[in-house]
Image: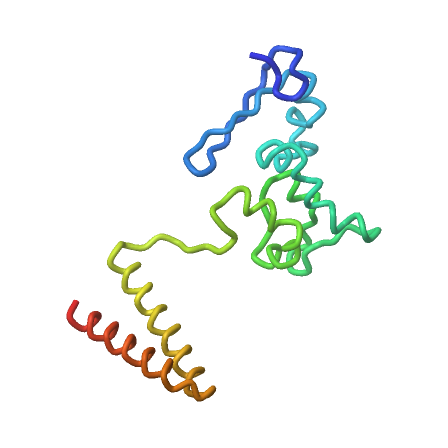
Length: 168
């Protein structure tokens, strides 16, 4: 098996990442693994290898504008720390480094908003509750804007949805 970077030497280092039930492998020769810092944990750019080669440049875009490297005000974590470890220091880091992380997180996950896991019945109830809130908000706006035909239609939808919830 040849190196994924240089395509010349036999691969000796094999890294695997699973994203959305798909396995992505990076195979590196000894020389390329040393260049990427795989043998040196302090210089190893996990973001580059696991998120795709060139991912750290996405993080460097905001830093290139200013001379000093931005750091999280809560924990002092810097972008270079993320590039080395592949992890952030605290919850505030997500807001501090939001601009550079958006593209990376979208590529790694289904989206940038955590939905969590819940039993099917609880998910259905949450969805119905959200739909009820959205309909009520639209109804309030229709009444405020004096669109009474639309308000009547929305009122009927709300009643039907509430009736369906009560029978379950």
